[in-house]
Length: 317
Ligand code: NAD
Image (cartoon, rainbow, N blue to C red; front, side):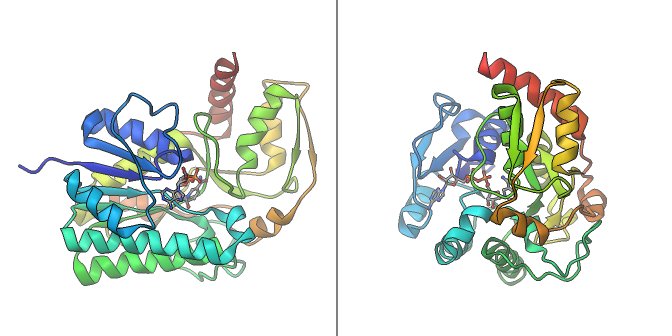
């Protein structure tokens, strides 16, 4: 019987660290190879194999896949929404070529499964804002969203044309305390907890009533693993599934924090990220993820806030 051997690319990022640790628990430490451009993240040190890799170097990637007998790849390396707007051509190049390198090696080597995340950024100002459906107008206006939408089409193409078992989720903004966010428009929802504890106040780069779809990292990790563990016949969407956790505004997250830190105060100074947020949905309909592979989120704003503050307090000593 063939044993699963997993390669995580972009393992030192906000999602990568936690996903790598979760996969190591399930598959065994030595069966999950972590890789990134950056130095190994402190939380990964000593937990399993680590390889320095630039995913843009297809030959190196190919050699790594063969050398480690890789059967599944989780591709998390990307340039995120806010950073992407600063250098659109670079974001397009990295986001597309990294995916094409992985998909093509999957085809050549007959890999079992590929995971690549999409984002709610595929939606644009003409998409319905509330309960945005799986299939609707998709006209992204950021280069990040354009690259994610094109990536979804490539995933479906490789599935239909070559039978590659590629799976994907449109993550909402992800909130976590273990590793820092990487330049997205929803990063405020992580920063606010840190500054609430350190400064007692926060200056928000989005306006008070900007509602965005969000998710707590434990839900995102569970969704990813449940999707990847599901029977292939159940995965009917081969572009990327809508995925929903919760939806809130800066004003509401501030109110939730005040339940724990009554003196906390927030001010608003919207910057270029406001325009990105304005083009995105406020909430997502993820009915297909529920129907096809049983997705159900666990965390709401209150439960997440309690857990974030508790863990950050411990971390900061
Ligand atoms: P991140 O920026 O925190 O991490 C990405 C990692 O990829 C970094 O450690 C970076 O060093 C690495 N990387 C960049 N270029 C590389 C290269 N050429 N070769 C190898 N590694 C490289 O991002 P994240 O938040 O962990 O996001 C992971 C994936 O999830 C991305 O595809 C992102 O678009 C998607 N996503 C994230 C969110 C979110 O809120 N975090 C929301 C929607 C979708």
